[in-house]
Image 1: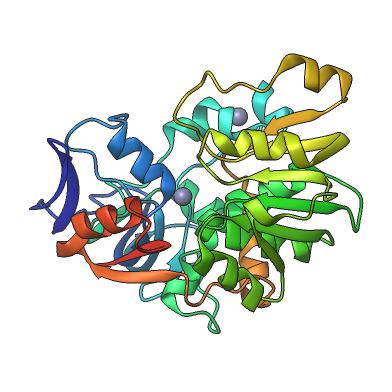
Image 2: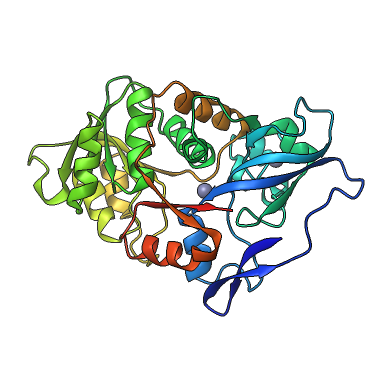
Length: 326
Ligand SMILES: [Zn+2]
Ligand SMILES: [Zn+2]
């Protein structure tokens, strides 16, 4: 089978032995496609993942072999995420599922940018779902990234009709703005790239060039999807006193920390959110299935053999999001 691996600052496609069940519980799936996540880019660029790693986790796939107590059968087209929390550790009990040791140790093998993938029984019982019939494969591939957003929106936990400013309107920002709206907030988006601002406006959500936000604008919540250091200044400028800033991306320098005194005197809350729980994922699929979060037009398709180009085009902002076809 073909799989894309990190190799010396490049992503190359290599041949491997097919994934097989070999008596294990779980399923072997044929990956139909896999979204390229911002975290895949970070892992590649900052060399967090070693050579030989198969990235990708936003898969839509068809079951070709199964040995499971779950409801699934051969031929089913499913979506799944890659990590499963234990539900019992101190992190899980506090709702910080992404910090759970079991969560971090679970994964799909070898990774989403691979023709065949092994899913454990735990995946099938906790985080896999049938692809809803009204969603295309590409639309369904937003199940996991939107799940991350749903969790972050829940953590923001503001009052109905509060204003939330989404800073950064890449694919995550576009999804976030719609998810926030679905949860009852007044949403305003901002970015520097005109096409992205227009994209959100077309979805019926207010959006501005960040340099042109109204002078008196303030928001109870700021949702940080931008990975630029400068975005932190934007957040502090527009968050109202007592407001919340949700951090949803890494920035190049860690020196750009939030200033202690502003947090103190203005009673600000700064909180982070990373990966979703099984329930957040289920809610994500609901938002997609009901059309409350629309994702058509966000992705650009690439075949696995062009995966390096997909990475390059994403990094240079030429496209909003890549979907890799297997
Ligand atoms: Zn992702
Ligand atoms: Zn746990």
